[in-house]
Image (cartoon, rainbow, N blue to C red):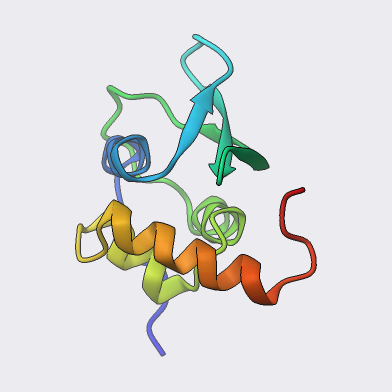
Length: 104
């Protein structure tokens, strides 16, 4: 079982922004976004700054993967583009179909 890989904040922000359904909540350097599934909010997260090449820490990456409802391996796949936006939506459909905490 592999752990979470090191990604720059820009790589993470770009991948989530392109593939994960969301609505933007702010315009500061660290943006708050609502993650959406079938038009309903299921999580609010903070995205790192878009121009920084710093690596996001392991603890923060692990929390972000959890907020996205992804295993470490699937999180890695999402960021390095082995998982498409369509595949992520299919993953969410499967997750919320078996999880009692699905958005209302």
